Amino acid sequence: MKIKVLLVDDEKLERVLIRKGFYWEERGFEIIGEASHGEEALDIMNHKQPDLVVTDINMPFMDGLELTEEILKQYPQCKVIIVTGYREFDYARRAVKLGVKDFLLKPVNIKDLEETVTKVKKEIEEQKSINTEYVKLQETVHEHHEIVIESFLQRLVEGRVEEEEARNKLTLYGYEGILKRNCCINIKPIFSPDTKEEEKLQLSREMLFVAKSIGSDDMVIFQHFLYNIILFIPSLEGMEEEAIAHKLLERILNQLRIECIIGISEVQDGFQGILHTYIQSQKAISTSVILGKNCVIPYREYRRMKRKSSSMEKFDWKEFIVAIEDGMESQVFDSLDYYLKAMSKEGLFDPNYLKLSTMSMLSKASTVLTKYGKSLEDIIDQDDMYAKVSKIDTIWSMKQYLKESIGVILNYHNTIRSKKSKLIDQVVTYLEEHLYEQNLTLKRIAKDVYVNESYLSRIFKKEMGESLIEYITRKRIEESKRLLDTTDLKVYEIAERVGISDPHYFSICFKKQVGVMVKEYKKQRV
Image 1: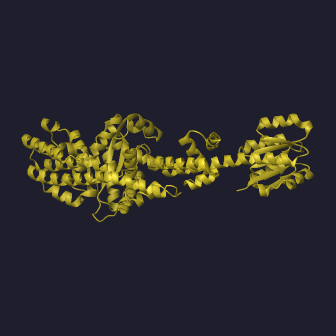
Image 2 (image 1 turned 90 degrees about the vertical axis):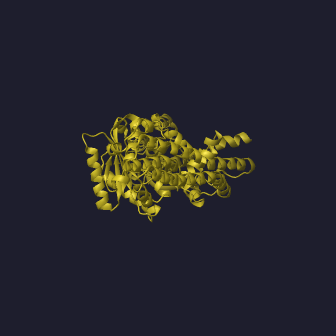
C-alpha cells in the first residue's frame, strides 16, 4: 500500500517543483492532493486522510505552523514536513517542537527531499506494521476471550488453579462476587448412545445460551469440557437458587427437548467454597440413579441418602485416586475391598445407599479421565450403567459392578499412558516434516495425529518441558540463526523460509528467543 501525500504551498510553482522533481509513485508514494493554504488542506485531510503532509510555513489564511498544530491534534498518526526559507529558521525550530518530523529549506533540493521523505516513509511503514499487529492482536483477544475465560473456569472447578491466580482472574473478569459466597448449579445433559461429538457440543452450547438468558450479570456461567453447564451464583435470599434451577429445567426440556439432571450445592464461603460447591453439585447429580432423570436435585438429598459412619469417613479417597492415576490395579482393588468390608461392618445394606455409594466411587475413579478430556459416560454406556446400578441390592452385586467398571477405567487409562511416549515421538517426527510450513497450527497437528487438541497440548508440555508452540518457535528461530550465519538472505526471506509470514512477528520471536534484535545479531557476526 502506497504512502498518501498531501502538498501544501501557496506558490503553485513550488508545488510543481516538489511534485515533478521526485519520482513519488516509483518510490511507494501517492500524491492525493494539493492545497494553496491551510484551510483548504484541512478540508482535503478530512476527506482523504493522508499519511504525510509537506507544507510551507508562510501562507495566507492559516500558516504552516497553525496547520501543523491542527493536523497533529486531529490526526496524530500523520507525519508533517515543513518547507521554509532561511529567514524563517526560528519558525522551523518551533515546528519541530510541535511534532513536525523534519523541515526542508527553500529552494527545495530534490536530493534532500528524497532523503527526508524516504526516512519518514520508513517510520510510517513501521508504525502501520505495529498498528496492524495491534489490530490483529485485538481481534485475536476478542475472538479467544471467551475461550480463555472458559478454560480458566474449567481448571478452577477441577481444583487446578492456585488461590492467588483465581482471585486475580475472577476480579479481572468481573466475577469476584463468587469469592464471598456462592452456590453451584450443575446441568448434566443426557445424550443417546448414538449422539456424535459434534452434536453433543452443539446441544451443550444451546443449553449454555438458555442458561445465560436466565442468568444475571453477577453469575458465572460456562460450559464444562464434559458438556455440563455450570452456574456459580452469588448467594441469594431463601431458595431462589432452586427456583432458577427449576426454570432452567423447564426451558431445557420444553424448548430444546434435551433430557438432563440438575444438581444444586449448598451455599459456601470463600475461595475454597468454589470447589466445594462444584463437588456438591456433582454429588447431587449422582443421586439421579435413585431419583431418576429430568429433575432438580439439591445436595441435601444426597446427604439424606448418604448416611455416613465413623468407619466410612476414615476411608482414604486420596490414596484410592493416586492408585488409579498410577495404574496400580491390585492396590485399587484392595482399596475397594476395604471400602466394602467397612460398609458391611457398619451394616450399611440399604439398596439406595448401595446405589449411591457405587456412583460415588465411580465418580472418584473417573477423575483420572478428565485429563484426557473424557467423562465416565464416554467409555461406559450411560444407559447400561444406570440400568446395572439400579439393580444393585447387595454389597456383593455392588462389588461385581465396581470391579467391572473400574477395570474399564484402568484399562483405558493404562492404554493411554502407554501411548503417551509413542504419541510424542509421532508428533516430533511430524514436526520435523512440516516445521517450516506457515499453516502449521495446534489444531492441524492434533487432527493429523488423531488426538484432542487440549490433550495434545497438556501431554506435550508435560513430556517435553515446553509448550508445543514454544517448541515450534524455538526450532524455527534456531533455523533462522543458521540461515543468518550461512546465507545473505534478507530478513523477510528468512522469516518466510522458517514458516513465519509476518516479518514483524518474526522479529518479536527472534528477540524473545535470542535476546537481541535481528540487526544486532547480524552486527555481532561481522
